[in-house]
Length: 368
Image (cartoon, rainbow, N blue to C red; front, side):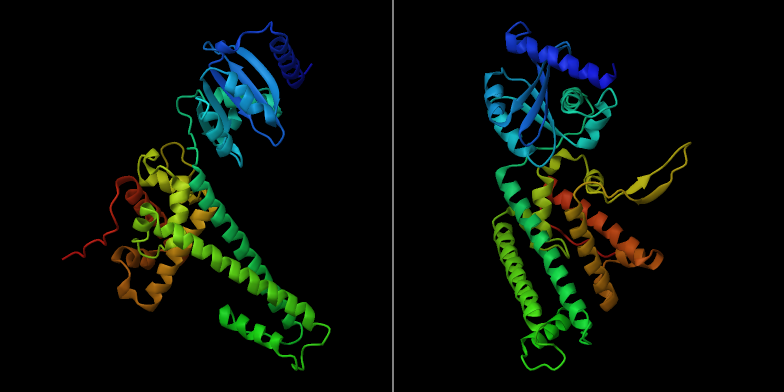
């Protein structure tokens, strides 16, 4: 028998004993690992000495009933799409719930095979490690604004696809326009002209359908922007982040929703590393080798910070005297892309300082 079959047999034995009442009582369980799913959940429980006392599957409707019967214990699960909901619900029953990044749980999967039982056991083992990194459980408000941002990002992507489709289709008939919103507006105006000689009559309804969908998507994005601006106006942390140059309501609200309690990071560098804005290290033998940024963490927030830094780059080209001496010196010795990423890293550190220590942004004083 292989390790996977041994694990399955062990799971059946422990689960069977608990169903028949001959296994250890619920009071012996001190730590539980949960493998989340859509319909079938796997739980793995151990006692204070680390001995396995429970392995069983739960249907979705049985999860809260199961934890309601348990005495307070430590519950570990991977941070995923539904983990924050289950974390709030299980914590409300008196348990201590800790969410963990899936990449940190993977090394604890035993037997070299992946199944629900092995994943639940890995969660149970990883949650007890003293140096494990945990993900804070998001509040309902934080999840709402995060969903709003994800919806806006989806709509922006769809709007870009529609614009590219319109440009491509019309270019096949010799109708090309300049880049940017102005060029697209010119193409939309041509579609509205019923007497344009270059557009076949059979093509016009197709282009009008794409143009109508583009306009509808653009209105929906504007609605998302208004909702984000309203949330930003009512959140003190988001307003303070907006005092940082180049950071507006969209980036500020996304940072607040993603960071949660900023004091869980020791310093700004750790926060920037969490966003994937620090160089990847490949060092050995006392020789430090730094590569490209790690790109770990929240990709959306990282992109927003890079876009803010890119705006500063455009400002430096238009008016070099308006940018900080630090950024001007960085542009003098680094490529523009490296400089913008470095500036995004600095913006993340400044944002952490305001979130963790309070206050608003104050521009550094020029040297005398």
